[in-house]
Image: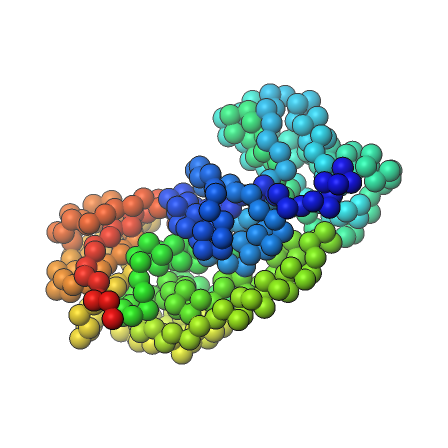
Length: 384
């Protein structure tokens, strides 16, 4: 155990994501040098060291959280769960004054009571630490460790949350409109569009500006986790130097690309929020927000990209105003024939309403809402 305590070069890590964007997260992992990964529903598993754990938190734009996987094992009853948890070398990561909080979920498993599973896991962790640290009592006044017990088909997976607040919390969006688009989903839309800063980008229903802010951060290579805290930054076994070096590197990698980005919204309060959010994210000078409606959309540019999350209507049903709006969108798609359109909506018969078949259609989840990304590919500008 003493050798393993010092050898943390092989950590089992899990990045979680919304359903439908796992491949986007896998692509982001490649950018930070992680090529081997295993994708399943909502999770991307990979191995790495503490530097990879830190960089994953700082750089992943589309992932929801980064977990440190401790063990997976079969658990058909509470005794299996207790013994399986007890056998983990928790002391390699958790100090004896740690504040331990256990969360859980259970799907298609005999152990259905999540609250019972949580208390059994916590009891087994405390028991394991007592034996290893040779103490009888824990103060729990130190750094926080949130441990997740996840049961699927009677297989238990134990993991420690390294992120703390979800990775969608970048720190720039204190206020947002109704049914806001998550920052992580917005970043995934930008990646899926393959937009580059040499093309104009417009969001004609920009709301609080999330898609455009994420696009500007991507264009300027601003790491999404640069201005926020992470749970694992408080952990004593991750040297602060790793955090400091990774954050310094992220600041050094910021570019100044001056993308052409425009956002429209008719609501004054939403418009002001978008401007504030962009300033807070450090991209205020990269986005031109205009208080106007979608119907006023005009451009002289031949090549461009529209990425948008238009209104769905009340209770996600189509009312006549929304239907008229979507028909007008169809006219715009036909008019700007060299442009690309990426439209995220929960409306299943969108193509029928706009009278144009999408090049591609992808199912995504925005929170718990099932949505569709209708993709209309235009022309790319010639390489300069």
